[in-house]
Amino acid sequence: MPQVSATDRSDAPHAAADLRDRTVVLIGGGSGIGLRVAHRVVAAGGRVVLGGRTASRLAAAAEELGDAARWQTVDTGDAAPLAAFFDGIDRVDHLFTTAASYQVGPMRELSPADAASPFESKFWGQYHAVRLAAPKLADDGSVVLMSGAASARPAGLAPAYVACNAAIEGLGRGLAVELAPVRVNVISPGTVDGHLWSNRSDTVREAAFDQYRRESLLGRPATEDEIAHSVVYLFTNTFTTGSTLYPDGGYTLR
Ligand SMILES: NC(=O)c1ccc[n+]([C@@H]2O[C@H](COP(=O)([O-])OP(=O)(O)OC[C@H]3O[C@@H](n4cnc5c(N)ncnc54)[C@H](OP(=O)(O)O)[C@@H]3O)[C@@H](O)[C@H]2O)c1
Image (cartoon, rainbow, N blue to C red; front, side, top):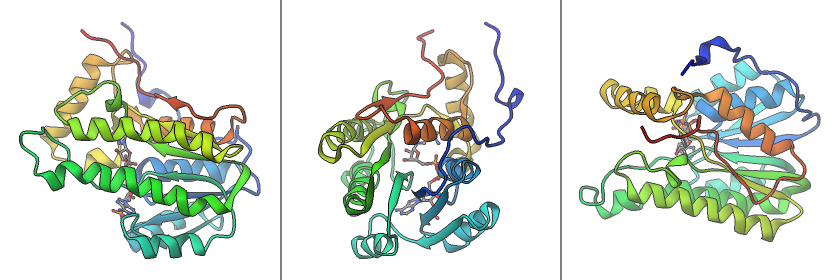
């Protein structure tokens, strides 16, 4: 099957979406997919507020983005600082939280605490971020929750992580009902060649990427910017709510 490589297309953000005068809160926006979303938001005329635990990472990201970006350290697992983070923001037009730190592995090998870590960090972190943002969300604004395509197509041995992502997709459907007319959607990406995987060992990363080359219809992992493009679509499509979008390159069993 002929394949189009990610490098054949430009990663340059473009201003097809209009986010003028919009404030977009990106917790986890100091790196990876969140940072690519920030670039697209700024290119579309919006402002970004970046959150994360590491001041130097956030400062470097804000420097890349220019005057439209501000940042504040926050840990989504820490209730008081998370509340203080939102106290400092008057209005939220769109919220996207990639912040999460968790362990992944087989049930028979993970400790109970490690098995619970995706729920503790990725599920409850996002839940509390939305809860605190809710009073400030613009009626014509939106929330995008971060899931992962493992929810529907588990590629490795990680049942608690799989279940956590499925729970986030259910949370998105439930919050869409509670928060309407604010739109709530979920992004559920496949494997992405970017910051998250660059922090894992070469062996683990190459095994995951090779599996993705074999099992995805497009024969490669995504770029972070391809996922960011989908997130901005969910921010700006005014008739999409309660949906989960799977930018995963398609799936086949070979
Ligand atoms: N990359 C993929 O292949 C892929 C595929 C599917 C789903 N996902 C999901 O995408 C999310 C990760 O995003 P990414 O791929 O863009 O990775 P990333 O670059 O590692 O982004 C995560 C960001 O969140 C911050 N962070 C982590 N824990 C935090 C916490 N407790 N409080 C506040 N900030 C925190 C990190 O910065 P600090 O460490 O400085 O806080 C980092 O900037 C995860 O939910 C992951 O499950 C990723």
